[in-house]
Length: 107
Image 1 (tube, rainbow, N blue to C red):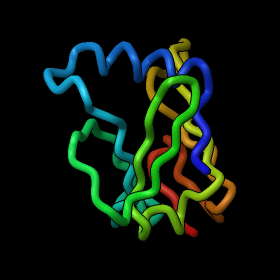
Image 2: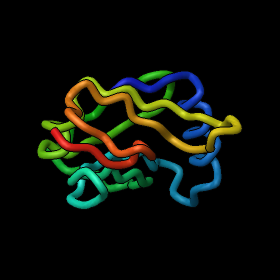
Image 3: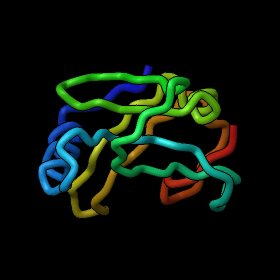
């Protein structure tokens, strides 16, 4: 499961409202790179594959490919808009180490 906090759901809905494709959803991926070896990649998509894992929470649909899901199962997606920075944050129980900015990790 991928969990979405209320703050993250609100921001995703706000951003989705600007999208031109009305049936878009949030795609979460893990890609190679970053300080710690792997990075999170977020984007809106409207094309689903049969092998994708689909999660819906607080009215937000999150889609993850099977390979990425191995690294982020159980992750919570949050959103921060405070003085220390604005953006999405991942609380990943599978990360053994993560960089200071929180955008890359190793598992």
